Amino acid sequence: MSAAVGKQAGKIRVALIGTVGIPAKYGGFETLAEHLVTRLGSRVEFTVYCSSRSYETSEPRFKSAKLVYLPLKPNGIQSIPYDILATIHAFGGHDVFLFLGASGAVVFPFLRFFPGKKVLINLGGLEWQRNKWNLTGKTVLKFLERLAVYNSDAIIADNQVISEYIKQRYHRDSMVIAYGGDHAFKTPLTGETLRSQPYLAKPYSFTVCRIEPENNVHLMLEAFVALPDRELVVVGNWGVSTFSNTLLSAYSGFQNIHMLPAIYQPEKLNELRANCALYINGHSAGGTPPSLVEAMSLELPVAAYDTKSNRAATLNQAYYFDSAKSLQNLITNLTDKELLENRRAMADIAKEHYSWANISENYFNLFIA
Image (cartoon, rainbow, N blue to C red; front, side):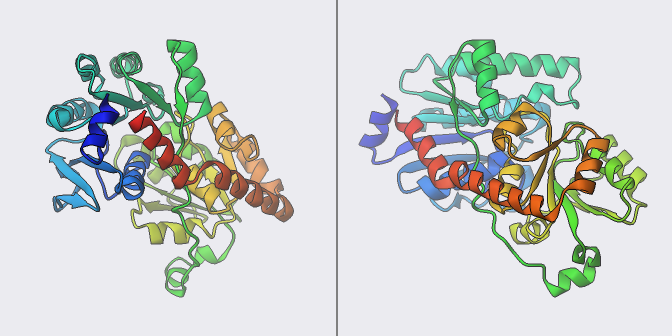
């Protein structure tokens, strides 16, 4: 029914709820939103809900999408009223509600009273697994997850392991749609960058992530302390939590460890990561990390923290570690030939499974189903 309404109006109308906003400047959900708008804008009338606290100016549109700003933070406890307010605002003028994350799940049962409203949920990772949440937070997040799964018309999992979890725990089917990585592009190191960061002239390992316990940055740092002749570059949001401040204080004195602040300019980020000798993915909570997919698309050899979801994302063809010692052994023993072969394997997987053209079409098919 919702698809028919959209076709009569020329375009199906989709409210995209749960992101910081676009243009993307935060994480995987925001990048997904930007690419859906870019690739499907000729066929879909998007409204994207944004946090006014994250943008200096409130532009009314991004390409063909309408942008609506809410005066709340889209993360933490405020994400719940943030998504609820977005849903209330979107209710009258949209056929499809695409929720990125389950924070707004308390309104899903209400939406189901209206057969012309289609509710789609992309859970992302299993948010309640993150160490930053206390028992109360984990309980609330599990409740929201359950509400979302049982009260949505379709469920999107970004990883086969998440899909299997949904089936086992809730007995519901889901569609596996990961993230694209082919927007990441190779950029050579410039003379200016090498002058300001001369350590980049040597082979270096690289990671980019939020500095949280489940991303295992502490294991990487510990491994490289024992490898003083090997360089490590970590880009992340240092200085925003007790955990990140503790790591910054403990490891900033080591000459081979370079802890850089978060980088939101794609050109600069790609310059640093596209030229690394090894990409290290430490994510352990959730599904397919967008940063991992981007690294694979850049033809980087990958060492990933050993989880079922990381193995699924890399089709068991990356290198894996589960401790500082095992990562240290990998870095010490991997040969140039092995790294080259792994580059090719990661690139082949990315081309087959992580293209935005295919991913956006999968979403469009859900919109019109």
